[in-house]
Amino acid sequence: MAETLAEVEGVVCSGLGEGAQFTQLDWAVNEFRRKLGFAPHPGTFNLQMQGDSWAGLRERLMRDAGVGITPVDGFCAARCFRVTINESVEGAVVFPEVAGYPPDKFEVIAPIPVRQTLGVNDGDRVTVRVLIE
Image (cartoon, rainbow, N blue to C red; front, side, top):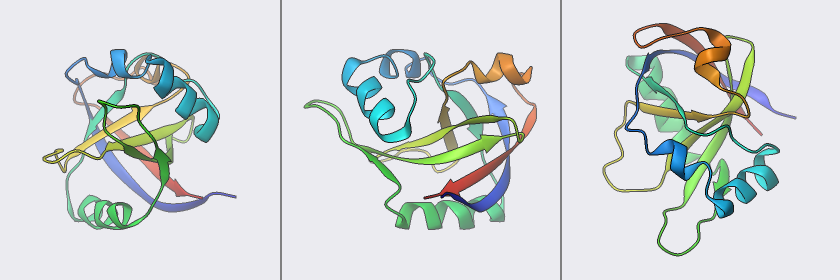
């Protein structure tokens, strides 16, 4: 059973648009479905994180194995952690294992369109509960 690791706030922001393609690759969909129990809606829900509580949580997450996503050749591995946003939307934060990944970036995949479901826009604040298995 999953337990809450921490609760932090993030600011909704636009991404680069690459998440929509990545989340629909056959191998990625299969990995997410098998390991997280859902196929992601196209794209990612992006947050900018800041502050001491985020820095401490990020440090802990980087030490934890999380749910490993095994790539096919030519793609990077990733680690995921289950999350709940605003106590209503469940998904997973994805941390690609690439050099230089921004420390304030928080990309969530979910089986539903998070922005539309929550009715949020860039600049809005949301609460994220990070869970560990």
